[in-house]
Length: 128
Image 1 (cartoon, helix red, strand yellow):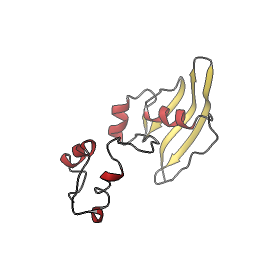
Image 2: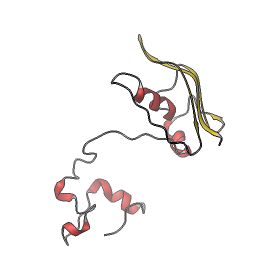
Image 3: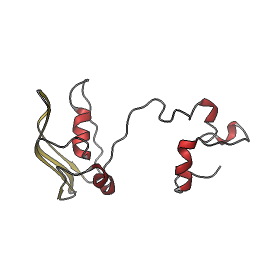
């Protein structure tokens, strides 16, 4: 297999706080990789650095052979690099009463939250 993602001596600091120091790693195409560690270990900063949310202060990030060290987030997304957020309830209006979208058997009355309506228009949400 070939390497799809490579970080070489990546460092990131926020004022006096060193969040990442000389991180070097490679990920092969098709490889599934888990990132674990205690709170404050730099996991989120590492993912943000790869996706362009917070660029590295030093080192290089390479994706599929291209240097993406200082890539903008929208360009990273076009390459397929993005991150998700750990939110218990991502849409405020998607309450238990609105779960009919994900469970069509819950009721014959099917509703969709306004926040999810754009997904339907874009063709990403099946009609129930």
